[in-house]
Length: 225
Image 1 (cartoon, rainbow, N blue to C red):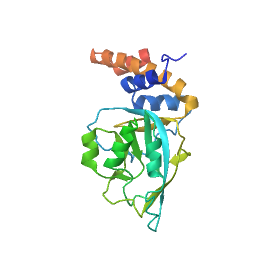
Image 2: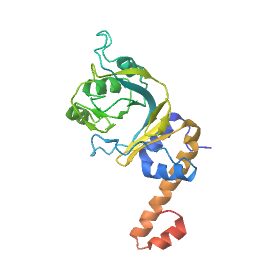
Image 3: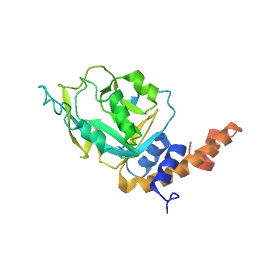
Image 4: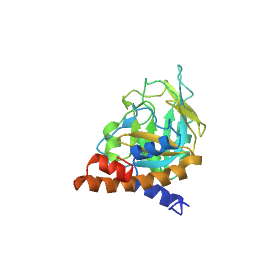
């Protein structure tokens, strides 16, 4: 049985005690060796210490070459933002890197719905405003060029492939300064349980080494390093 009794307790435990490196180690040990999103996706604000943990809302972006209907200039983007639920993360992919996929007002809209962050497989803009809002955003970089007339959201809630990783709505996403990892629902209980145990053991090893234990002895005793 897991040590958490609710979704909120599970998310809180992950945010307080876990990080992508330890989760990645556990994924490797149980045969899930391709759960990290591309290393090019980095935190917009590298000083933000928050570990991003939440459920994924998948958003599909597509390049276009003509100005769309002005009644819906970004396709389904606004509808996707309005569909966000508390503790969800806006994950957008599928387009080229010729324009920004996310900005200040989208940040405000996402936060108002209870979302906890965004991951954009491309660029974002309004960088200072997003950083000032302390809203965790991961992206490939920043670029002020608008997506209107260049790209639009064509779907949301459908499976996405990001850097060879298949992501579905509701998968658990964990992001920090070392990267982003996604856990399929069928594996999350096992992975999180083992990751919590490993994180606690690593804390014991940290203390032992600080007190003079040799690395080889620490590994022999604790099995981690």
